[in-house]
Length: 109
Image (tube, rainbow, N blue to C red; front, side, top):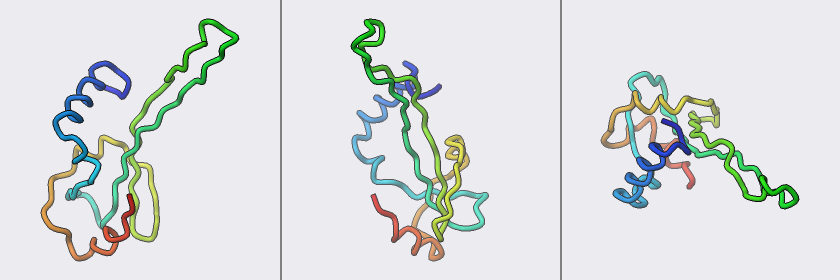
C-alpha cells in the first residue's frame, strides 16, 4: 500500500474524516530501541509534472510519484532518514520523560 494508490487514499480519507485535525498535533510514543530521545518527522513528498499545453497528451498536471518520508531528529540537530515502517515499532506513551523535555520544548510547527 503506497500513497497515490486507491486503497491507500481511501484509508487516508477514512482516517482524516474520523480524526479531523487531531493527528496534526503530534503524539508521544516510546521507542524501545532508542538510546536517546528524538523527534520523528513525517512528510508527504510528491513529484508533479507541470502541464505542457503545446502537447495534447501532456496538457494536464500529473502526479508522477507520491511518497511518505520519515526523518529522525536528535538533540543537537542531528538528522537521519528513517523508514516510515519504523513507526510500527513504537508504542503509545504517557508523560514526557525528563531527558526528552528540552528537545520537545524546542519543537516548532
